[in-house]
Length: 513
Image (cartoon, rainbow, N blue to C red; front, top):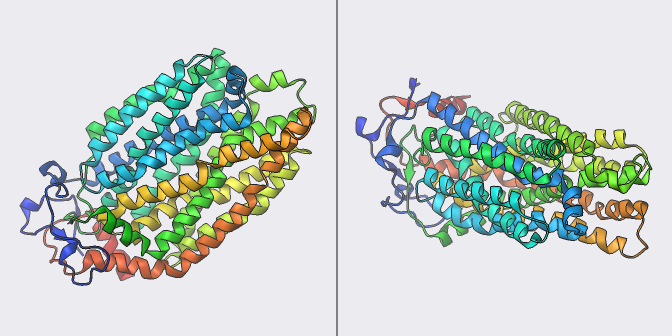
């Protein structure tokens, strides 16, 4: 076994960078030797110590947390925004839809860049745009709702650059069980950041009396994240973790990359599963606080609809439930994966299927219990989010180990595009549009306003069942596709003298078990 240590520069050992084009068994695309746009720069090749790798993950997690805080701050004060701009449910859902649409449309572009150029530069440029547009949206006045919609769409441009690339940097810093832990830490920020978005949004609005201030918190914190990203995060060679810090290089066209991914069956089926999950989480995250507020009004537990506008209890409680269920769910999913992975090679997609299918009955209870018991509803909201959160880290890790390193950013980008296009880009608007259509069929009343949203939520459990089926299909192919990716990286690899990257040692241990 090689000693643990930092990644040493290729100049310190007589070893060429590995190119996937040297493999005679390469079937997907035509990869050739490295070119200047793909080859790591001298700064990229510098030694990356384990300490620096952990610091980089901490910074990436912090920014990911802020991304999701910002994304769901509006949902935490949605009823107040609806009253401020005098907009319906469907128009309110459009705020999230335009954000996700710009996010998904530009994800492939950033994925293409992320597989070829310096990833830190790309993320820094995107985050800068995110900071400016997110801060700008907090100054929109009552007569300029269209400007708020435009700025929300531009916020998605900035986030697209980060979400497609950051996981691949973690994938190049760690491998094996340690990578799963680091990915878990990164993706646990999704439910935690989402929950904090509700809490911060409603709390700051309550404290200041103005919802605009709620949108100014994350840009301030994001400026700190941008500085930390530039100063502390390395841009490791692609595939460094699997190749003892050497990295893999190659050139292929975007068409060849897409062709390779479409032939990867576990990638295709898991992307469809992620899409179903995104539909559920997008709809629930955007509408549940409003749904529960309307349920309370219909039960006459609040005296008037005016109190709904400034009653922050549902956003606070839902935010707390989301944080708690997210942390517990991601930790539980990671633990189950580590326990079963060596015993059942297709354990990861099975766990994801259990999470999706198990959430379905919980969603039914949420929909029908809200009219009679809010506490019972919150219990099943917690259980549904817990089961859905089992999947976050496993989905990211599956993508990293079934796709070769030089195509991971493209894979992330295409998966993001599909899952948002068919998932949470449309689900908030679809739920709102169905609710409006049902509500307009009868005279307006607090009870009918609640029931219309309740009936529109019935779409969600059926999507959950569909997602479970997609993950079961993934389980049929995941073992074969993982071995294929490993062969492409390892074939014709030169001997590895000298100090090795710490996670690469861990990979060796994993294979000996």
